[in-house]
Every structure is written in structure tokens, then in C-alpha cells.
Image (cartoon, rainbow, N blue to C red; front, top):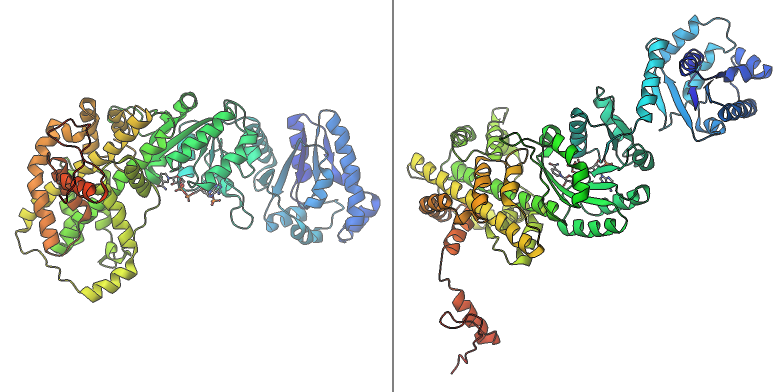
Length: 632
Ligand code: NAP
């Protein structure tokens, strides 16, 4: 092992280098000892050395290092201020670079205390200017005792020698939080963030700077070094944006991995992309686990809900890590389960987010009716929601809404200052597309996506609001009575939102032979995730009986009792000029799904009329097709 301790004059290279050499039982070389007399004379006179003086001297030092490398190695103390000089000293790939770094005032003081050295203290300024700090090696501050500094250096070497059990790529909101969560749970991890010159530099190292207590985390911005720091089989979690970034990252990893290593994509990837990536990686013998993670930043840090799918062998190798960091359900079991094969992990996360869209929009519509129809202020609405939290309406989303409504800025509700433009980023729209592909009625959750799309058209809304100037009538009825009905309407909408989301999962699971276990999926969604709620806890039991919430006896009783109130609230909203797309779709769905004889017979007759599409009859064999000449 060759260790090069370097830095400006007066930083303590010789003292630290010699002490380190003693501790590590390596020979010590001081580059200053190899300066020719002419160099020493110049430096003594305060004249900086130039390349003509330095390069032959460094070549001579490099020769000594080469000799040492053939034996047991050495510790070298040398200024090595810039990359050009360091390159001369790189005689082997096995060099540990240790930069001694100190404030100018401290180094000046040390130089002032030094007697009998040939280096003139006046050279410090030029050396500090010449110092190029590289992005590799160790950087050690020199404001403690030489013994402590040497101890720190050795501790760091030990850390570098030991392999990590798990790697996380992407030190954004989620990756950083999951990494710290893993470390908190005793997992030795390496973290990596890409390097983009001038934009993304030292991101992984910064995580450690911000969290200095996490001594065992190893930060990297070189992908090969990151992968090399992991023990085998290597388990690598990607927490980066879905799409091209994931493909590029996987391509970069493939040549660095071996058969049996595991890549876990924890981002919100589209499940069909996950299926393709699984197939690609299977050919290379790399195990791919497409994993949904929910809970936002706080969940990732303290305990998310985790939905792994794909390669089961890969899952079994990382199950222990995931169980350590996951939230715990009401019985203390980790909110993580193997969801199923292929892209099912990401598919389930996609539907989770779709239900999240529906739940958020339902709360927004209820809020809008309270604010605009009943003319209640945010504080009052928060207190009503707080009462609802004591009922079976309790949910994480309602809980955070209370905090949001209570946030005031300069005496005014902050909510009123927030621009009313929401976007949909992927999972909501993908769910809707999938519902269309599989022919699943998805109106209620689809409306939540459409409501965001409409909100995004602020310009058009502003112009048409002025042009139409439609009247919006505030409520003139008994507020408490309406609030009771609104509560029931919201309860019904929530049940329907969940029914619709789970119906999509049922259809896709059956068609793909995924055998999704809905009770287990509901269980891992009872904590850690954004749609955790009392209702979700009830669904754990409901799905043990049936795959359809609507067929559950208690749900039937509840929906029958809420149906009138939901119809009433939607009717009042529409008659008085307030849009409630999710609530109105919920009542339409409920009425539609409970209608034995729908007007689709007329649709079939029309299709047969203009396109001879044929129809089937309810009084004949259902497989038989009929066509009528309608004009005769
Ligand atoms: P983020 O804060 O924007 O962080 C993204 C990370 O990915 C950053 O470290 C970024 O590095 C890195 N990155 C970006 N482009 C890259 C590329 N082309 N190659 C390699 N790395 C790249 O995002 P996030 O919120 O942590 O989300 C990460 C993933 O988790 C996404 O798929 C997201 O949908 C999903 N997710 C997010 C949440 C949430 O609440 N935020 C919840 C569940 C799931 P730079 O710093 O270099 O740009």
C-alpha cells in the first residue's frame, strides 16, 4: 500500500506522515529529503520552484515510491499540489491520497512556530493558490492533534476496505431518505449520485457532510468504485426518475455486475417498462426487482410501504433489508410483501397512486363545497375534518389537509395563495390508460386525473370565467344538515374509489396470472403509504372474503345508506354551480353498477343498425349473434 500525505507547506505532512507510517508499520519517505541543494536554496530564499526544478525532483521521488511498492509499500509526505505533479507520483493503482487541509491562519501560525526548516513561510500564499483539490482520496482537516488526525485517517481506510451490504443510487428526496433509513437500521451502505460537471458535484459526499454521525456510509460519484464497494451478491436500489434515466443507469451497471446480483428499481416506473427490463436483465443473469415505494420523504426516512415484484429469487435476497426499513402494520409486521411476478410491483404502485389521485380530489371537492357553497373558513373546515378523523373516515390525507387548512400567513390562509394548477406526472394517467386497455370502468379515478388536467388550463379557465360569468349560489340551507350529508357522500365516494382501483388490479392480475393477494396489498397499505386509512384497515378483512368491496355485506349496507346523500350533495353542487367530478362520477358508478338492465341494449341496436355489428339477445342463447334489417 502506498499512502501519499500531501498539502501546502506547514500543513503537517511530515509529522502526520511519519506518525501514520509508524502506526501502519510502513516505511516513511519525506519528499523534501530528495530535493537537490539548488531547490532548497531557492525555497529558503522565498523563491517558488518552477517545473524545471520540480519535475526532476518528483521523478526521483516516484522512483523511490516504485521501489517501495515492490516491497511492503510506504507512506510519502509530499506537497503534490496539482494534478500534473500527482500524476508523476501515480506509480501504482494502489495509492491512497490523503490531503491535509487547514485554514490559512492556522497554517501560518504553524509555520511561524517552525524553526530550522528550509521552506520560507512567504511561499504559503503561492502554494495555497496552486493547490488543486481532486475529487478522489481522503480530505482531512488539521485542526486536531496529530494523533487524532492519524486515528481518523486509519478509521477511514478501514471503512474503505470494508464492503457495503447494499447500495443506493440517486441522492434526491427519496434516495437520501431511504439510505439514511437503511443506515439507521444497521445496514452498511454505499451511496452514489451521478456527477455532472458544474451542476451535480459531490452530491453523495454532501449527504455525509449533512449527516456526519453516519460514519459507515460510503459516498461515491464514480459508478465503478461504487459497485466495487459492495459485497456480493451486490444489491443496488435505484431511486431516480422513471423512464430513460432508469434505462441509462441499468446500461451503465450491466458491465459492472455479475450473475446473481440484484437491481431494485424503487422509482415510479411504468410497469410495462419493468417487464421489458426484467427480460433484458434475465438474459444477463441479473435479478431485477421492480418495486413500488410509497410514503413520500417522511415515509422513506421513517418507514415506507414497499411493493416489490418481479424476480422472486432476487426479492428473497433483499427481503431482510426491505423488512428492516418498512413501516409496521397494526400487528407490528413490516409493510412489505412480495407482490407478484413481472411488473406487478410497479403496477400495484401505479394503482396505489391512482387511488391517491381519487382520494385527494374527493377531499378537494368536499373542501370546495364547504368553502364555496357553505361559505366556511379554512379554520372551521379544519375543525370539521378533525371531527371526521374520529370516525371511520380517518386517513393520512385528511390528517394532512387539516394542517394545511390551519396554515396562515400574515393573518390569511396560505391555501388562498397557492396557484390552483395541478399536474399529473404519470401514474394517474397510466392507470387510466391501463383501465381503457383492459376495459375496466374507471370513470371515478379517471375524473381525478382529468380534474388535474383541467386545473392546469388556468388561462382558458380565467378567460371563460369572465365570458360566462355563471352564477354560483352559496348554500341557503341548514349547514349542519348539509355537513352530515356531505360526510356520507364523502364516505360513499371513498368506498367507490377503492373499489374501482382494486377492480383494475383484479382484471390485470387475472389476465396476467399474477395472483395478486388484495388482503395482503391492503395490509401493506395500512401504514407508511399516502393512502393509509381506517378504511384500508377494514379492507384487509374484506378482501379475505371477496375480491370486490361492493359485494361485501357491510359495504352494501353502508352504500345503501349513503346513496341518497351522495345524490343530494351532487345535485346541490351542480344546481348551484360547483363542479364535483369525482363525487358525481361516484354516484353514477354506484347507480350504474347496481343497474341490472342498462340502456346499453339501445347502443347495441344502434351499432347493428349502422354497422351490422350484430347483437345478442337476453331471451336466446347468449353466444348467438343476431342482425336485424331495421328499415324493414
Ligand atoms: P428527486 O428528488 O428529483 O431525485 C432524483 C434523483 O435521481 C437525483 O438524485 C438525481 O440526481 C437522480 N437523477 C436524475 N436524472 C438522472 C439520470 N439521468 N441518471 C442518474 N440519476 C439521475 O426525485 P425523488 O422524489 O427522490 O424520486 C425518485 C423516484 O422515486 C422517482 O421515480 C419518483 O417518481 C419516485 N417516488 C417519489 C416519491 C416522492 O414522494 N418524492 C414517492 C414515491 C416514489 P441529480 O441530483 O444529479 O439530478
